Structures are given as C-alpha cells and as structure tokens.
Image (cartoon, rainbow, N blue to C red; front, side):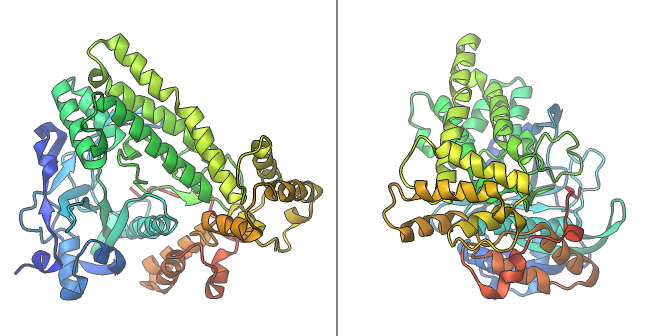
Length: 488
C-alpha cells in the first residue's frame, strides 16, 4: 500500500473534463531530501485523512510531490487577470493541482502544491517557494479560519533543502493548500479571451455544479450564478473589514469564485486604524488599501460579468443590461451588509437613523488618534480602555456617551450586547510584528516554538486567555511592519 493510500487521499480529476487549453499537465519537480516542517492535524481530521497512520518522512514525500496519489493527474491551471488594472495572460507558474480529494460526505476540495516547480505557465520564473512566505500563508490562512472567515487552508509545509534565489538566498519550501476550488475571476477571463463560448459555458457549468448547485435548475442559471458570486464576495469583504484584514493584491486572478480568501501574499491586519493602510511593497498608489477593498471587489466582479456576457444573452446589448443590473446593485448591498456588521461590532440591536453617523464618528476619532482597531472594539464591551492617549480625548469621551445612549435602545440586556460584541470583535489577531518574529526564528534558527504558540493562540481568537496576553499588544514604533512581500 502506498503512502497516499495509507493517508486516505481519495483523488478525482474533474477539472480534466474542461477543454485541454484550460490547463497543462505538469509533474511537480522531484525533491531529493524533503523534510516536513509543519502539518495541520486538525485539518487532516476534518478531511478524514490519517496522519497517525503515516510517518513524517513519508508525509514529506507526498506533500512535496515526489509521491503522487493513485489516479491523480497533476495539472497547472490556466487563467488570466487584471494585475493592478493591467490585463495579462497568466496561469499557475509554481503550483500543481494534484486533484480533488473527495470526502466521505461527497464534498470535494482541491489539493494543490505551491512552490512545487516550474510549469508551462512559469513565464521565466523558477517555480519555487521560499520558507517564509509559505509559513506566512500557513499562519494567516489558519488565523482566518479561526476568525470564521471563508478561506483556503494549509495542510502542510515541507522544506525542500534547496536554495531559492530572490534578493537574498532563502531556504526553499512547498505549501500544500486546500481550497473549495481554485477557479478564479481570472479563470473566466481566460476562457473569454479564447473567444470560445463553449469553453466559457463548460467552465461556468463546472463552477455552478461545484459551488452553486442551487442555481442549476434555474431558468437563468448564469444570471443567478453571477448574482450569487457577488453576494459571497460582499460577505467576504465585509468579514475582512470586520477584523481589519487587508488582502494587499486584489487582482482578478486572486478572487476565488467560491468566495474564499485566496493567495496570501502581501496581506496583513491593521494595528492602528487608518482606512488608507497599505501593506504591499509594490502598491505605491494605494490601489489595494483597506478602504478600497469593496470598490475593487465591485470592479473585479464587473470584469467577471464582462467575461460572462455571451452566457447572459445572445443579444449583446441585452447581455450588457443584465450584467449592469447585477453589478450596479453592488454598492447598496455592500453598504447595508457593512453597516449591519459594524452595528454588531458596536453591540447594537435594531436599526436607528443615527447608526451610520455613530459608526463614522468612532472611525473618525480612531483615525485621528491612531487608535488600535482590534483592541478598541474589544475594549468597548468592557469599558476598560487602558492608558492609551486616544481614550482620554474629548472627542472619544463625547462619542462614548452617544454610543451608550444608543446601545440602551432595543437592547434585550447588557449581557446580550456584550455577547454580540465579543462574538464579532476578536480578542487576538496575527499581529504583523509577531508573525515576522515567528517567521524569522523559523527561517534562521529552525525554531518553530513561536510559530506554534501563535497558531495555538489564533485557533480561538474570540476567547480571552491570559497566557497569550502579550500577543495582543500593539507593536512598539520600532517593531511596526509597514510592508510585506508576495515572496515570489
């Protein structure tokens, strides 16, 4: 019995049902001496995989791609994308989709290796991944899962023992990523760019069957599909903003049709609140700033609608009107969802005319006083604000009185309000400086103790635990991490 059979991987390759130009068959590059750095035992259990039946040496062989599961045909997917507004043809340049793991209940999840070698879409790249970015995606994706936000997840990171040449020489690594699928807005753009409506229809039918089966029997399945994708993206962006998350590179190839957060490159969580916060080292104009995430999601969805026009109606003018009907509704839906979310963060029940002004009032004070986003909202439920200067300003004290008066309206009980707030305001997030410290120890000293402690704390981010109190503290000025990198 092979190690894959022992592990319990049950692989199908339904993506191969699409036209051949939608992917390229490609084998992961062989790795001479792979070493398992970290494995996600809880995720393995959720996927009905048997980590306890296989040793780490054999796991490393599977999760570097040396051992391919029975029946699997590794591929790299073709897609296009608007990167910083510029359209280009792309594809998995350093990733191999091993296939879909079928769970006992029939659900399917993609198993993808990232950093596993060159593919036909590498465009001159080496196809490799560095240890730091792979571990970073592991940490942040697991943090997002703990926060209750739809996300791809990380099953393992394997060290390759090979150097990766970037600005400096870095240790190589491969991430095993689990996703509902890897179909992106950019996948539809790629299909549309072929000028082949049959390919576009097959891709849409594939995505509908995989993610939106409820619209299959509709008289207007593609219209309903586009509407459903937009709603999931609205829900996702609202969740990002709830916890202060900034994706960093919201290109159309980084927006998953499933509604999951995907491709953790230059992403991070805000410390001090500033709607113009940017973390990407290459986003010099602030295109993907915190406050721009909703407009960019709308823009990306408009590109999806453009790609799908031939499916919406055979009459191009009618198709455009149908697409506009959906896309032009984004802002109203988003604003309502965002305000509903913020009212929960404030512990408010019911709806009052002054709610938007109340929310904007605190955000204005927080911006002016550079108040910590996570800790300020968490402190509202206890009224224990600490010694930070912003909490003693006249603006904040005046706002607090207005908020307390509003909170008393429609409130079942103070306890109910606190419970509502504590379930929507995390006590802990992956602070940038803490993540960077954990990665530095792992890369330079092979010390994963800080990383494991961080992961343990982030597994239950809404529960206050005294033993992790130090991980909730904002960074000192000397520890602030302003820019992150995609690591490619």
